[in-house]
Image 1 (tube, rainbow, N blue to C red):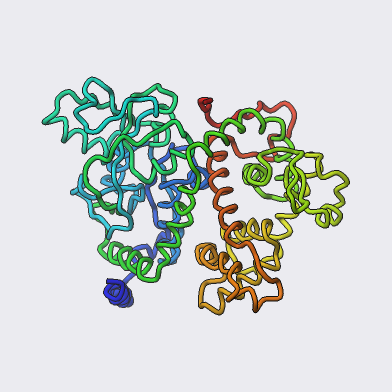
Image 2 (image 1 turned 45 degrees about the vertical axis):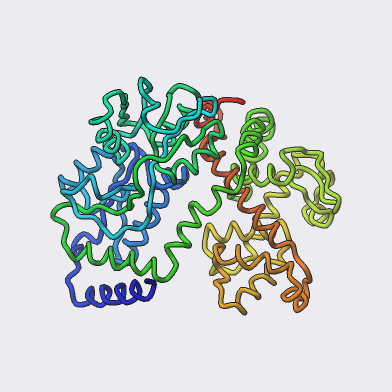
Length: 465
């Protein structure tokens, strides 16, 4: 199958040459996404999930075509299809299924999805849709989930379907977690993210069959664009780049248990407010998002300023004595010294990495070096080279780092044995904690320091357990 995909990709790619570029005048590719009209692509990327994955994939298509990507957010699926039909954009990238939108052209599939019924953990177990009689099921208006329930309601009139036009699937799950809604029908990819943000949730059961996720094109789209987009997707799949991109957005989300995330959210309420300003000041000094720094600190010490390990690292950021001396930290147990020092150490590690490592892989590798040392990370990169693995890809390095604990590899290294597997776990945990903080805590901007401006409160309220 992979060989067939490669051949098809090259065939379609060869067909592209000699064709006129349908965007020769504008040099722009207009892409519809889901979001409020005032939102920017950066905000969508920050929230993560399927929306950010779609943005990145569509942006890469535009880059391959030599075009500037222009993202136009629309509030809901219905408006997205209407705007696509009115010619306001060339394509829509918003986790869409082709079946219910037969009037528009669909791309080759780039993901498979299932629909999941989500309830609160205190809800009695459900085994089938008939048990939801007299309960309200909340969905996004115009979505695949709404269409599926509407079809089912023809034979099950007791279904009560509530469709929302100005919410997202994560918003529905937040309301189920707060027991404001009985149940919600969402995609399995969004549920896997939501269960980390709201551990009170549970998956009741899957509904319907697996269905493909595609891009949708305006009815009058030049066939050349459709052919190029399909060639791009086939090539991404054939080269493994699509798997790497999926790992970037979804590869870490199943690392923690619900008990882990519940504990983190409780600590986020109880402990984080004491240190928020210190993390924000560290962001100003290093340029690293304060929420990522807070996630690192939680992984290291659970935000305990007096934490001490058997190996001698101490404080909230678990700094070694040598690092403390280098950064002029007189008291590692003082959060006002530990947090900025840990942030600076991480920034220094990131700056030490080769320039060809791009973000966010660069940051993930710096976090790995924070855990096991730059010497061991360089050794793992050397091993990657001997195995023809991509030294600049976190996706590849996740597979290589555990080899540092195998005599077959570490006996040939000056750095010796390393705890590469632990470093991978640490980085992936931090990514989950950062995702949770990105959902519940607002980003910090320098303008927030100006006196007289209104305080910026946390993004969303979260139910305490």
